[in-house]
Image 1 (cartoon, rainbow, N blue to C red):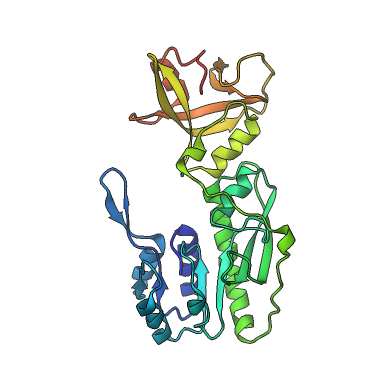
Image 2 (image 1 turned 135 degrees about the horizontal axis):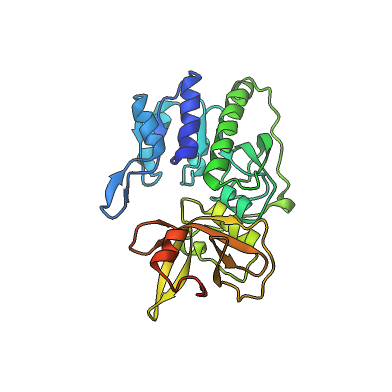
Amino acid sequence: MGTPDFAANILRVMLKEKLDIISVYTQGDKKVGRSQSLEKSAVKNVAEEYKIKVFEPKKFDEGVVREIENQKPDLIIVSAYGKILPKIVLEIPRFGVINTHPSSLPKYRGASPIQNAILNGEKKTAATIMCLVEKVDAGDILKQEEVEIGEYETYPELSQRLSDISARLLIEIIPLLIAGKIEPKKQNESEATFCQLIKKEDGKINWEDKARDIYNRFRAFYVWPGIFTYFEKDNRSLRLKLNKVSLDEHSKENDFENGKVFEENEVVKVKTSKGNIILEEVQLEGKNKMQATDFVRGYANFVGSVLK
């Protein structure tokens, strides 16, 4: 049971290892883009490639539960599914339900642990395999492997690494679980923390923050939802997406207003409360993405403006 790329990678590894996957449960096709065309989940694409039966229930009603019971699964593996399993489903498989969770549980329970770890400037996280229970991410831990987070690593990069590790851990522990040779470890509830749910507007930059914190936001929200700011032009406030930024590693302190755009050695920078952010690729709403240096040439008043 899973939906995004993180889970699809794990499914593919299990299939290559010849685990007997009898069916796949995933979120239904979603409308995407301006054309609102239907797009299958990454997990569904892998399942169809391997000709595995796919189910996309909207909820776990009586008919869906009976359908799962009739399949007589020995084990259910959940990975970024996006739906809560009721107790009646948790009790169906002979060897229970196990879940992959990419965090140092009990830290960062919830739906966006990778993004939140990066956002908060964590140096380490973990790939965790746990027993699934009714309470969110509170089950006993079967295996946990610590992972260092690269200083410049973005969400997609870290997600791929954690998915690879999670897949390997699953392959290692499933035979031990079936044989009763693994001892689940209880989580320390007093150390539990929870993720914030990420919304599109969370990508809004506050130039009163430090450059490192803004850069962490870029890394955490890379691809989606992305980071953005507002640029005043002709008495209009235009949304400017910052597709690619970097830290000014050799910044000199200046007395500019926070959010002020300036050029230094043909590099476009923005002042923050501590340090500068280098703009590399930007995209004005309704326009194509551009290199920041090209954007400056097209919008002469950009340098010297104060982003909000």
